[in-house]
Length: 406
Image 1 (cartoon, rainbow, N blue to C red):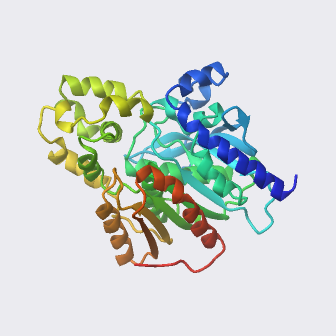
Image 2 (image 1 turned 90 degrees about the horizontal axis):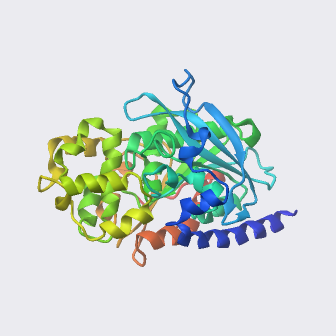
Image 3 (image 1 turned 90 degrees about the vertical axis):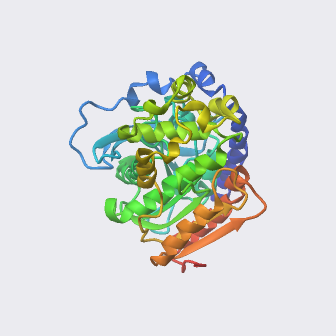
């Protein structure tokens, strides 16, 4: 098959993948009937106990898979890898990543690898992107296709807790950034993928993926300095989870704050979130920790934080403030250029938080190109902003000077 034919096949798959969005609510049941076991019933996801004394990014086990868009096999080579990573306390953990490599030959030096970081899927093991790839319901495959048609390889982390130990440590910055960087290491150490450990790496993601990408960029100089990272493209970035909570309190997406609180409490047992929950809060948290985002969004829309706690504003409690500060972006300094795209009218993320993150990076010498969109909101910019992010990454892989509008 010629390169142009492969591109046509991939672009057709892109359009097909977009249609998977409507499958979210019933996805797990459909997957079971299609012969794909849920992660809870799949031994691949169970980390060895104890974990062997291996380096971060080392592969514990791997397997080839068929990545699908609905029922159609997606035209790439694909693998799942269970690899070693590092949790919030600095201890070893295990995380799953999915590696996608185009069939298109790459002849211009080492094939670039993009760490594509998914947006919010959920806390349950049923929401893991590695599972959704096999089930044919990973709708963000549509955006990854923009990288795959260029011949780049893609690695997608499940992040900590998702499908392995659970629940996912949603919005906890350090374990998420570690998982991204160790997913890159694992992809480069997977012999079948044929990726050069010294090859160029790009980091890209939106929403939770923007958080993951930004944390990976800030942590990389100290945690994974050997990686040849060329740049980070991050959109819809939640710099401060407390500020996000206030913005969505009482709105249609309030359920995401409940999920964030559970994720942070899982990563930080010292939060002891249960001590401030009332009966309604305990019931909600027991439900949300086992759900994907399409399940928690409708029932918790237009509720408020104060309905679920015995204190008026738990965000202001000293122990919560300490955890929020620990997970606030902007304390680290990427050593690579950054591209930040944000909607001024984002219904989740305060635009001033993104501006503050960019100002901080700029003040420490990071070349940043920031694009603010007036004609979008959170979800639409994930789609309309993707081509610009891919174009920016292509320039970084091409060794062109990084634009800077600091």
